[in-house]
Image (cartoon, rainbow, N blue to C red):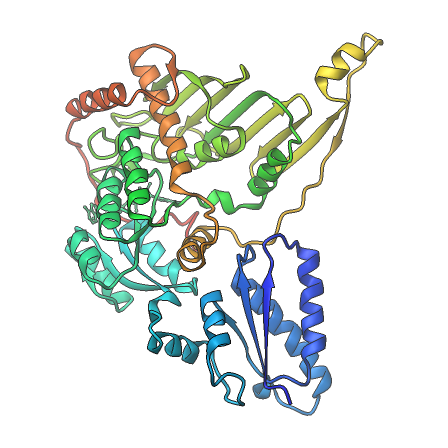
Length: 498
Ligand SMILES: NC(=O)c1ccc[n+]([C@@H]2O[C@H](COP(=O)([O-])OP(=O)(O)OC[C@H]3O[C@@H](n4cnc5c(N)ncnc54)[C@H](O)[C@@H]3O)[C@@H](O)[C@H]2O)c1
């Protein structure tokens, strides 16, 4: 009797319907003969936990149909192995001889055969475990590809509290954490101006880096981070969890399929309200020295990234920024006129002064239009395309027909955990990154271009002139004043953290 069946599935382009067929087939075919199913998945775009749960559920149902007399406890297991472990299994002389092997003991075999056990999971350090970093410490517990191995925070009480909570070593110096040999990769969740030095140090020591947004506040530092990752040959990603959200993934796929055609106009409105207590919560917030900008470098980066991910980086910005509501020295409102390389125009507005909030992106082209408003995406195709219809129509009041476009995207959970999982899989199996460092620089270019345009009163070309922006930032930092009030709160945002 067969003891084990290994299935290697390549599901990079698999859609939900195909997955359902596959699950059905596996559950029906495999039962009741096999004791164990090992599924190793290459380039998986589905969430592995999701696939595992589905398989487990389907197989349990099939098993129960065949064995109504057995109790729940006797249901055999389904194991996932990473492709390296699966390959190792193929070359293992003792395989398939009736021994009930688990993913864990195979990882052990891999280690004794010279493969590092850490290849099975990425040993992760978190640098900066305040509001966001402590939420990440909790979040990584649900990511099976990583193991929290150490934390670091410049504040000893914070480092100790999070280290003890998760029973991992803690450090007050990020360099000691990186040098400890305990971690293969780090999440950087310090205030943004600190991201570049931590990332560059980690790369110089051969670690992989997932940095919080924005990767840097100054394009010249962002360049340095990208170059350091390339030099080290390490994985570099930015925490842009909105890239995992379904409406944006649908919009991105529509753009890739050319549904919109040539871009004619864009619009971005990103309003995320913040009160004064938020700004007073930490010394670094909303100061030129501590943060390097206001809404443009803290709240807007997600929306700026999404805007550039969908429509590309504008070629020129003419902008204005101001501090309208809060008692802070950096901007809480910015607006900009944009010009794209093809001559299309755009408008951008971002603020922390408005409630309720707004997340709105509109991209109009000669073949269609995409509107994303507060989590809903609407895509319409224009038929025939505007450039054709405009000159072929005879009736002076006629307009082109527009029809809705349905776009399918693969099932995928959204959020920080999925970006982290993808980062780990990129390290373990070379899975393509959802938000690579090279793209993380887009929001830095756009934010810096807007600040430069506003402060110098001129239209600015992108990419931003590095020396010019660096000089402006030094001036702004020199004008920075110590804060009158600091509450000293480090609390994870309950709107984004479960
Ligand atoms: N992706 C998201 O959804 C999201 C949400 C919130 C914040 N963030 C980002 O996370 C980062 C941190 O924001 P926060 O709200 O957690 O701030 P925070 O002030 O609550 O936490 C920052 C922590 O970093 C520590 N720190 C400062 N300098 C350090 C150093 N040199 N070495 C080690 N630790 C150091 C501080 O002591 C503090 O505990 C920011 O870049 C922010 O933009 C991202």
